[in-house]
Image 1 (cartoon, rainbow, N blue to C red):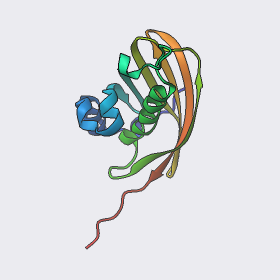
Image 2 (image 1 turned 60 degrees about the vertical axis):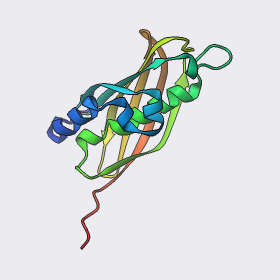
Image 3 (image 1 turned 120 degrees about the horizontal axis):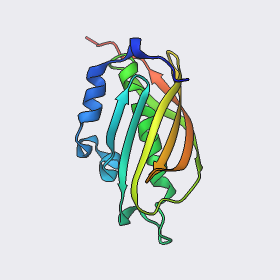
Amino acid sequence: MPLDLTDRFDPDIAARLQDADPASAGGLPAFLEVRITECGAGVLAARIDVTTALLTPFGAAHGGVLAALVDHVLGAVCYPVIPRGAWAATTEFKINYLAPVREGTLEARAEITTLGRRTAVVRIEAHANGDLVGIAQGTVTIRPPTPPTG
């Protein structure tokens, strides 16, 4: 059963995440063109298109592509339910790769299973073209907002 985080949910943060232009994310998320497709109280889904630039010489998406998408949703799912100004950083995660991804759309859906003041545990399922291709779980460190100085 999903963790009920509706009392901590900030719809403005969720809307900013979901409405953001993929290019504005910068870095690897921008290169992968990660698009947030769902953002709720403790859940977040994102997708990328699998292009030839992401394939290994053997014709499958590199495992790092899925790892990057997992890492992105692992931290991003926390922002709408942690205090504004707090910072969420992946501490660790593990992926079980279940099937190769050769084309189409790769999607990852993160769900917070526990959320404390300093850490969260998140489970992620990844699908490609409707098929389950990976399962991951990770821990996120949450740093409280830094008080203004001066």
